[in-house]
Image 1 (cartoon, rainbow, N blue to C red):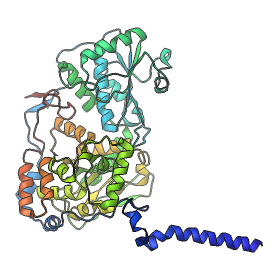
Image 2: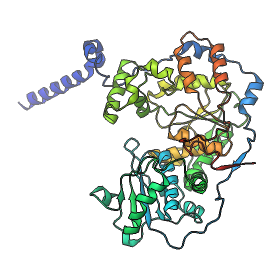
Image 3: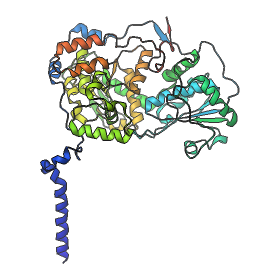
Length: 513
């Protein structure tokens, strides 16, 4: 009887295993189901190149020496220099109106902009700023605090003549925490701060709370301060925070410097202290630009792909998976989803795929010996998605290809710290380009403009129709790309009304000379 029971159990186990393996062994049996739902094992079919004629021609490209030299040459002086000190010197008032707390959501660069706005609001209100609280992002799930990312002492010291800043509220306000404000209606919490609120709004609505309670907590606080109609000193203060006060903690800077050094000197051996890790960069071709490198911000994660509502060539399984993810995250509230892929591309509203950004770089004049650093989180579609880019640019590196596991230990698995490393390396690069708009793109475009560094801004409206044209040949494509990007390689663009001071810091934070 015992043997019969054991034999029955074994047969049931094998039957269960057979049921699990049946869709793999005989997928045609389940074809009706597969037409309605993404695969259980993969939510995309491995994408193939979508622009094969252009790709084949790009692989055989020949670039004139003059074009290479122009491409790699630094920007000439454009008549502007940084000016972030106030036009009139004021000492800090002896009495503060109270304490300001802000709770910042979003990713690293959205939080960075929020920190700058928080300092500006504290200045407007003559208040003491408590080091901002960084919320855990629902997508990235990183619990890193302000002090885990930014050098707190440098932050406080740099702004010591502008705004009073404390690490924590004083003991009498020990109760003023995120949990306290999340568990009930509190008179000290400001929930109604408008997007791009004016200085007058804060004086009329937040100052009375400070005067009544001694502390005010503003949440939410993303994009809650206007870009226009603010005193020049407040605008300069925002840039002082962004470009001078916010420096990363030492271990991020040390790691970033190591990555930059290995990108600039790829044939040297690097020994990391405390480990037996020895890295040698050996290639058959000499890196173009003699020690120079390009940073490509390749934001092509699932979140971005789903929100764009564009078709990226992964088949019906991918389209269904992204639609389901879009519904899960935004409950159908995605404007792009009402348009066709063709309409979105004609309007330049689809992010560039790795293949498309590779073709853009090739058309601009970057050769296959260009050293490319990928600043990215995860590429949706995996290695298959970036295979065309790697064919065009074999010398592709990223954090994990340049550093040991021990060197990456403090940042691994922490999205904000990884983004901080990429930001640091991007700021040191000879050329920066982003495959899609977003907060990191905006932040680095502004920071590099402030420092007069070359940044290529893809002309999305022009590129969309180009990639829709399947009959276009390489010479025509290359001519269109070069013509459409002559004035998009770091030339000064003065901020217009309603534009972000963090993307366009000139003229607010610079002086003509």
